[in-house]
Length: 104
Image (cartoon, rainbow, N blue to C red):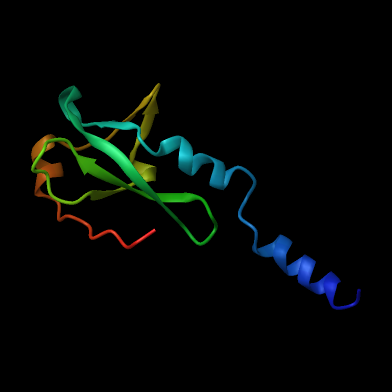
């Protein structure tokens, strides 16, 4: 039991804040809208910070021949119902480099 107490204490300290992991699935699949109301794409994956809170979203551009997803900061996005609003234009989004996705 003496060994278990420090281990449990460390787990509590290293655990992400309550609800942090719950936000990630909530963001996946959401539409991302740019300036002018243009659909940029949809959230494919959420990247978590060390704290467990969402830090980045990987947005898959719309279109059949679209390249890989683009990375946007969660802090820059605003939630609006079932969509996320990004403060960039479609041209700026398209000019961003594609992110190579690691295997899940």
